[in-house]
Image 1 (spheres, helix red, strand yellow):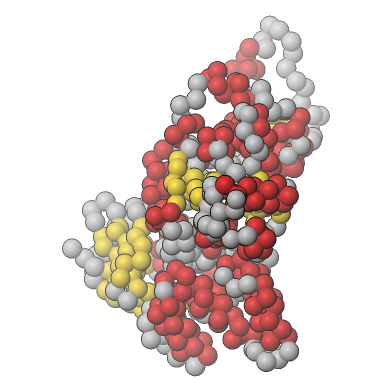
Image 2: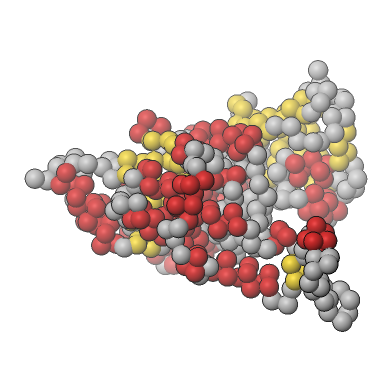
Length: 474
């Protein structure tokens, strides 16, 4: 007996496969969907995210949108916050051990994640879980039992593990501690250094730490505890996801299907979108900032953005691309449609329309923006309180920054406010004439903003970013 709650399996698969890199195995996902239709029981589909930073960017939304697709089809969407695993640090793609995060850092980041995630997922239909619910309660016996279920040789097949091990041992010596060296006294001789008298020593952070090997095993318990039917992740997470599937079977559960999504390329058109690389679009950024950044992506990149961060069907994207290729539609206009659709998803249609008009006003008509984001700075005895406003509405706030509460260099301020990737980049921009205050170019990288006096200044950072910075004194 077929339950009419769910769409036919073929229709569900077609919807779910949009933009997908790989389904492992597709036949198994199809079988799970088929059983769901027959029984009327929704699949349990989850996405696990470690809250390692306070803000999400557009690249994070690629997999989130796929979770939303399952939710749209009536399945159970589980958003798992890796509050415990974030304190371990996912070694995926890392060339050295991640610095550990404190419980306080993880907790603060997790709070902001949910507010941002529910811009995409339906709050009322999303099951939110934290993996500290089970991982924090593990006994040493349970951890040993878990590690016995996966071969070390298989773990070391992982590409980034192999690369780090090879780099750590090839022509290098691990520097033993002084205590270890002292313990050798009166026993076997210490290792002989090369004839140059200097050893090529691997730094401890660059070597493999044992806890990194535990990461995919401990997060596999997430899949066990959630009894998931499907797990989502980026292509770079494939190894972890397959370990999760295998460990589920070791605990007597059916292995989950795995669905991976491509990495979203950043604004530079070359590397993956990353906050640390400065090539990102934050989903909490004001509408006109998001719009301007979207318009800066290379023309050839916009088609992958259409596929990964909009709801357009493959047929609609192909037709739009044909219009551009055939000369019926200018690439700039196609990109403006893309930018407006993305901004609409996070800020609404009215804000997206205003952002488009502002872009037209500034970059096509070469006029000053009709509206701009305002950054309000309120000095306190111990720190600066910083808020980002758009149309008088608070978009986000920053916690204590370490900036001086009296005066601070513009270069450091711009970096801290995340208007440029780094202080050195801000200094370079200022020296090259890419920074204006109230229409006047400032080229002295040592110049400062005074927080002891109230002020309001319109600034331009680079060619496309306009802000008003207002200092409000008590």
